[in-house]
Length: 433
Image (cartoon, rainbow, N blue to C red; front, side, top):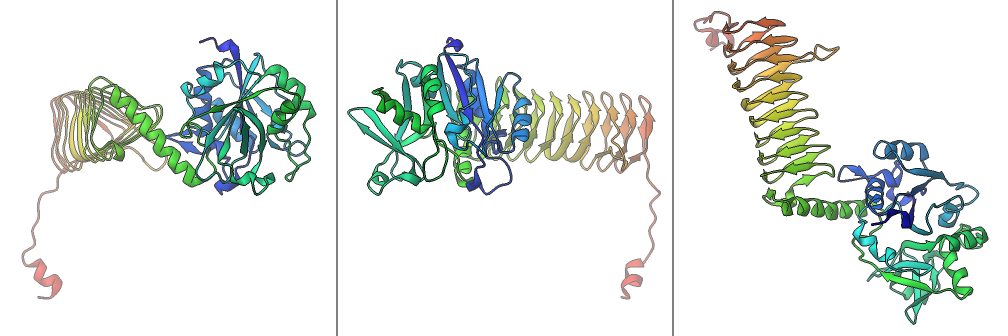
């Protein structure tokens, strides 16, 4: 595909007041990424010239998008003097001859869904779909297979409001059309805004043909409320999980599994119900059991769960962790930790067994410290390992032991238990029985 054929403009300047949120609408998350991220990702598949129009919370929008992409051009709209979609286009200078205008609240758009705009050579193409309930959308009046006009709902007559063909909000223009008509826009309407749709009216008045393009509502769904956000999340999740199942991942009850954009599966993987994968997680040839959470971690040739939690920066290889084991910022290679343990800021080598109830005490109230555990270490149940600590190879830690900072030498047994004392008849004395 020749990316030099089209420029893309994404309108992301609006407040999104119907979201009822202090956060800019385009920064609300869909499957772990701002909704604007998903639109840019799809756009980059077909274009090398992407501009984003910002205004509301522009600093936050620019900062978050720059964290993902380094080649996006931002244009700041003068929303006070030139509000509306037409005002958003006034400072756009596209590189290519064809310009595709997208909305920043359509996170389900795909490059494939945009192909219809690329294969037609008309001066203006606009997207439409038919809705049973068109409330909130501009109405599109079509005669003889050509668009006659677009009426914003706020300005529509009673008869025009009965039309169910609506504006999906995406347009393709030749650059010459924009250069000619954008400077002619005015704000003589109910909202005193500059409408991009008025370009359609002016072009029509000059005898130009406007082609409607029927699009799939699901891919072009706009997000105007938190209910819309939830529906879009469901659709995005279904797409993500279908992709990985088609790639060979086994999922039990996939509707109960959550996988963020950016998570990757490789090889033979199996995921049971209720699991959650977030961030830049990588799962390779592993079995993830029910209700396990994995965040920003790598799991290779391992069994995790059920009910385990890998917090960010964990790395597991040839390892088994089981029920209620939590791992954070640790590397485990060839380790067994069957249940009820916390392993934070640790490095644990092959052949080591972590007994139930073992915890690494990695935080002293001011900073975190590291625990290093060698090969073939056997740690008994209910042990506390107070970092910074080094346990060399072939060490046994007796159950119930508390190890303070320092080093346990290779081949040693470490045990810290007080001698058992029993006080005869203490129960009866204490309760007065």
